[in-house]
Each structure stands twice: as structure tokens, then as C-alpha cells.
Length: 613
Image 1 (tube, one colour):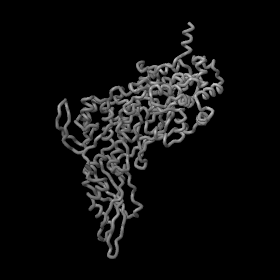
Image 2 (cartoon, rainbow, N blue to C red; image 1 turned 90 degrees about the vertical axis):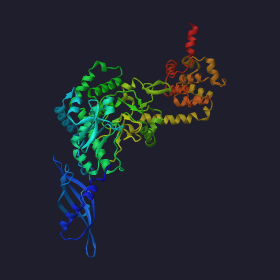
Image 3 (cartoon, rainbow, N blue to C red; image 1 turned 30 degrees about the vertical axis):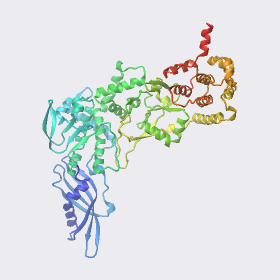
Image 4 (cartoon, rainbow, N blue to C red; image 1 turned 135 degrees about the vertical axis):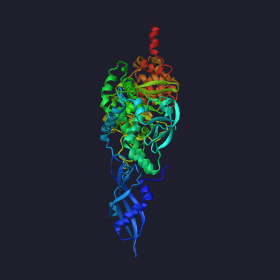
């Protein structure tokens, strides 16, 4: 539990007299100083020996015989962090206007390093070279076994969800060593790893957690020392898949911890999977015959899985790291939402920019439907369909049916999984964190959204090239609206006169229709003359196929025949799938119906041929 809200609060309470005396000495008039308030604090210098200098923006009120003056000062103080500022002293005082106070900066206040995004790879490579000299490496990654022996790293019983802990104050802790629990006198910087997760269960994420802790200790020692001044004794690391989101409602300490976690996550990825080793590893995996799968989507996913094993990290970490290095093919691999693993897909490399993806979660898909009129038009026109993680062209070439215990669902066809850039919409994603607080190093690339995470850290928009409807789509939407108007006209008020209308419009006579679906000429005539009281639902579907009707015309035919085809039954789903995808021919339609485990449409033409034989 922190004793102080921030470093300003610490100086205000612990070194009030030092600051007050510095102002008195500067004024040299002996007048009493009241209402001293520290408004801002900036670290102006720190060195390798943990000496730090700060500039404080301070206001005071000074009582005169007749009035009270409000005055502002910038006061520089310096001290040693290792000595817990017991040697703190004032080095200079300057009288200023209040608008000249140094501007608060969270990085500066907590002596956190300012790491530009473009420096992350360099820092990661630097740390990799350092630890490779100390611990060596196994194939392509640092040696975990040697790191555990060299660094002060131990297994300990930690709370659920806590991967590791850094000890900030010298203290006694329980550790497991040689299968025995014992008390260990831990010095600051000692790293404790979750025993159950990494020792008992041998979780494969141990390398990234160790790397994360090593980065903390290399980059954040001053920050951790500062935390002890504020009352913190340990730093816990939460689950690696839990998103780090900076919020205005957080305390200064919480925000600083978020930034430290961002930096540790970003650099740890580069320490665990150094860029200098990746190209050769990818080529080796690509040339491994065991990686070959008939479908390129499956092949790319196999590459990521093998890559993860090579570096002893999770598939999600491997995917994120490869995406950082520009391997955009990983966008179609290792996709999981709410425990549901999605089939991988492939597209032409170089298709996606760093902030683009084909993958979109349910919440952002629904938000786009509500807020983006053009996106809603694409979906409502039935040109595209959402498959739970991608938005695909609604066409039999790209959509397949998968049978499930609780029914069926639409999935990407094998062709679509090898040609995703032909049929999937692209989206731009960005982080929702307040950009005014800190330059964001890149939230975890979207690949898994845990159930407990109700707020997704990315938001999505259609890519610029997809936001404008092309002329073909505009024409289709207009045609769709014209179709609805025509179907509701008086001349098409019954099933019989609607069939007559289509036969005339498409120049299809009884004989041609008979050839297409095999239904007898007499039966066809009875239907379009209205002599059949109730047309069998299978024959309605056959007529839709024979007349080559589009989806809205099919809906209309079923409605006029007295069937509620929109009712959610397996048979209705199957029929809707048929005419939503404009399948032609009974043979192909019956193949699809078998996927749905539904009765096939009667092939009268087939029966006629068998009778003639």
C-alpha cells in the first residue's frame, strides 16, 4: 500500500522544511512563509550511481504587515536514490511566474526511461547481446537453465494470475530449491516466478516472463527504488494476455506501473525473440517438409506453431513478434475468440500495413454496423457476411458449410482460406488509450480476447480503400431496392402470377423448366395456374433454382407459398443458405443439403431417366 500518492506528495510531506528553508534563504527577508504547495515536478538529471536531480514548481504565500503575497519558485533539489534521499539538498532557487512552472511528465516524475518506438529493436538487441555473453543460448533463444542459475531467479508460491514478482526491499521470502521449500533472504532485484505455473506445470511461457523481469531490472531500477520511497515493497506481473490499458482514473503510481509494463512487454519480446535470428529461423521452418499442408492457411499456422516451439514461447507471443517484424501472413493464424479456435487463412504477403488486419471481433463488428453507414450497406446488401472473425464476400466460392452438434455454421471455403485478399474486408485498428498520457508502444496485436476482458483495447474502422462503395455495389443495392418495390406490386400478389411473371421475364417455358428441375409439365402448369392448393416446400425450392431467382425473390416465393422461411429451423437455414449463395442446379444444391443433414430436393429428372432405363 503506497504511503504517498506521487513524488510531489513525498517531497511535500518528507522534505517540506528543506524546500521552505531554501525559499527563505533565497528571499533573505525573514518573513514567514505559508501555504507551500508543490505543483509540478520534473527529473532533470540522473546518473549511473543513482544520483537524481529534480526541479519543483512551488507556490507560497508570504505575510507582509499590510498584505499577503503569492509567490512562485522553481527549486532544484538533488539526492541519491540508493540512500533513499537521506542526502537530499537544495542546489538552486529561481523566482518565476506560475505559468513558468516545469510541465509535469509522468516518465520524468518516476525516472522511467523515455524509449522511442524506433529504439525498441536496438535496445532489445543490446540486452540480447549482454545476456548471451552471460548465459549463452539454446539454438535461437537464451538458455533458461543458465539464466535461472546466474540471475537471482527462484520459484515461489504466488497468487493465481501473478506470473512473477520483483522484490524491491530486502526481505525474507519462501522459495523452492531442489524440490524443497526454504526461507531465502532476498535482496532488491530478486525475481520470483510462479511455482505452480512454471515449475509444476512446466508452462512454456517461462522465457518471456524471465525476459520481462530482466528488462524491468535493466531499465527500471530507479523506478523501483522510487516506488519504495512511496511505500511499495513488490511489483507483481499479471497474466501476459491481459491487456494493459492506461486510464485517466488511475493514480500516478498506477499509470507509471502501466508504462513500465508497456516498456517491459515491448523489450522482452525483442530479448526473447531477437530480430537477428528470425529470418533464418523462418526459412528453416518453411523448408521443413513436416510444415507442408495442402492448404496454405494451415501451412502458415504450422509455421507459427513451430516458430513458437523454437523460441520456447506461446503461439500468441510468436504471432505478435512476427507481426512486429513485418511478417503480415500471421494475421490469418492462431485466431481464437471466447475459446473458439478459427480456421487459419492465407493471403499475398505485403497485403497488410502494420495497423491493418482482416480479423475483427464481434463487439467491433457490431459497433461498425451501428456507426458506419457504408459498412452497414455492405452487410445489408448481402454482398458480405460476418463469420465471427472475418467479413467475407457472400459467395459460394468463398463460403462453405460446417456441421456442428448444435446445427451448422458458415465458414471460409478452402479456396477462401488460400486467397483471403480476394474476399475479405480489411480493417484499420488503433489503441484506445489516452494519447496525451504516454506514447503507446503497441498493444498486443489482436489474436486472442479473453472472456474477462470486456473492453477491447483496439477499435476498428474500414480501411480507406474499402470505405467507398464501388459502382458495382451501388448498382446492386439499387437493384435490391427496386426488387423489393416490384415484389410488393399488385401484379405479383400471388404465387401463381409471380411464377408466370418470372417465366415471361426470363423467357422460360414449361418445357425448359421441366428440363431444369424434372418436375412434370402438368405439375408445373397446375402450380402457375393456381390449381395446386398448397405447393410442397421442396418444389418451391426447386422452382427457385429452376427460375434462377436471387435471394429476395426466393424469400418472396416462400412467403407467397405460405412458408415462413425466416423461421430458425435447420431446414430453413439450409434453404436460406442455398438461395443466399445463388447455387444453380439440383445436384449441387443437394450436396449442400447433405452438409446440413437435410432431405435432398426430389430430382424428378433423375427419376425420369431411371424409369426410361
